[in-house]
Each structure stands twice: as C-alpha cells, then as structure tokens.
Image (cartoon, rainbow, N blue to C red):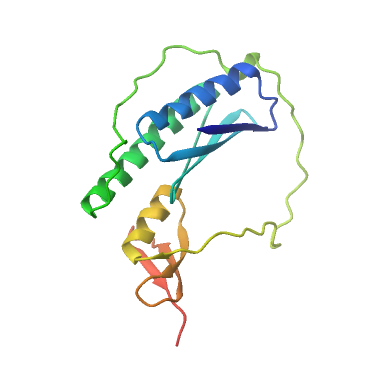
Length: 190
C-alpha cells in the first residue's frame, strides 16, 4: 500500500514517517483491497493531531485522533481504522459481499515511544480566521448506492453527511446524521 505522510505546522522526521507508514501499512495484512493512505500529522498548539484517509477498491475510510503524544495518536487512529474496516467487512458479509483476503487481528500497544518534544517543530502564528467565506472546493465521484450502503460509506469516512446517487430513484441525495443519532435523507422535489 502506498502511504503518504505529510506535516502541517511540523517537520516530519524520518522516524515519524517510518512509524506512521509501518503502523498504517499493517492494515493491508487484514484488508487486501486497500491501496493507498494519506496521513497528516499536525501540531495545534500543545496538541498533536493525526488524520488518516484510507482508499481501497470502492471503499474510503477516514479517522483522526489528537493528544499530547503524536505516536500514541497514530496508534489510536490505526486501531480505530481497523475497527471501522472490520465493521464494514462484517456488514459486507451480511449483505452478501465477501472479501476472502480480509482477516482481523487486534494489535496491542507498542510500549513507550518518544514524544514530540524532541522533534523539530515549526510554530507559525496563524492569522485571525475570516469566517463566512467558501474556503474549499472538492470534487468527488457520485456512485449509485442504496441508502443503507450510503450509511456505511458515511460511517467509514466519519462524516456527518454524504452525497450519493440513490440507486432506487436515480436522483442525487444527501444523507445526514441527525442530532438524535439517526439519519435523514435530503432529496430534490420532482
């Protein structure tokens, strides 16, 4: 699997890069359909944040974690992603889709690791944010999915909403998480 590691507000050392690649790369032993991962290591004041996006055959999974220790956050993100992928694999099996190469194994903690205090950091003081503007444009592929499949994809991405083509109606719908922990679908009027 191709694992790309980049830093935001931090210089990524070779040790950090190797640790992230090794820890995230272990997921391919259990989920053979994964072919790429993007790992972002960020410093936000005294907090370290790790964000990982996994890409596989028709599946994307996203997870993030933060804490005072970057290496521990990498471990927690990898564990969360493994649980997410295992949950997705279980749903796929129940829906009749199988992956014969996927296996599950829980990895324990790897003992003590160095903290980020010894790593070189770049501390930029960000300007005051200007709100109310469109600051990002994103393009993505819209696949025909059932609403149940859309829920699975949204959960794998850890998003609060998901845009998809409803396989039943052929229309573009927006699936969203409600405050009561249920889901809602927005569909255009006909």
